[in-house]
Image 1 (cartoon, rainbow, N blue to C red):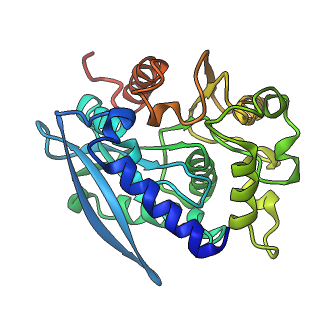
Image 2 (image 1 turned 180 degrees about the vertical axis):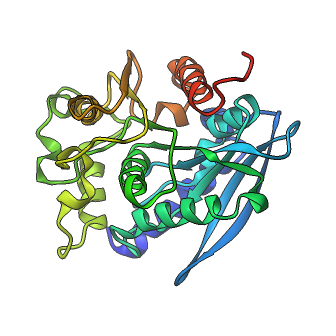
Length: 300
């Protein structure tokens, strides 16, 4: 496919995911949350943010910054409305979903830069966003989970301080070894994430000038002093072992990490609750984890 064809397919898919019919698959937003879109100006670019707020609470809320999946070449923040709005209403929290830049127009590491710069800008202006800057978490699915891991690693030294990270079926290895995990072979034919799409995503998003180890957190030498992590995996997912191996490495370095695997679940199942019943159980677990770390004194 040409670059123009990739962009055209992305736009068509995103429109479908946001449509009324698409909501049957992606799930309806929580009625207890209000969803708005706003823009944020960063050096050299303007990004769209999809902001979820509880209708009943206005100020000094925890912040959850969320990153959608799509292989760095597709996806949209709206595909996570079912999960993000629920967390906003029930945590409660302000959940900001980032429309980071995508390939082939914008290759790595630009999406990572968008993630960190957005986090830093929001936490730096808590009054505008109505957040508690001391209660911040990151969350991402698929390559969005990869963004969350890399943003957390950068924030470890540069700030802001983080209390938690939730990584839903993350890709954590973007090197040539990313296809060498047992789960890749076991689930190679799963239509939720065809290996052809995964290869195309890596090819289109990774410039020849980039060392892929710099965006592959599972290969990093130091994974200590990171916020507690919940890693959600799916039994039928080709990249399930990316998440498993990352949890092993976090634990090796003394970082608190919990791994949960859902049987009969596919890649991106939290974006398709209309198709995969396990999404509801996973959502309950994510909510409990975030409340425990962001609002430890709140009543259940």
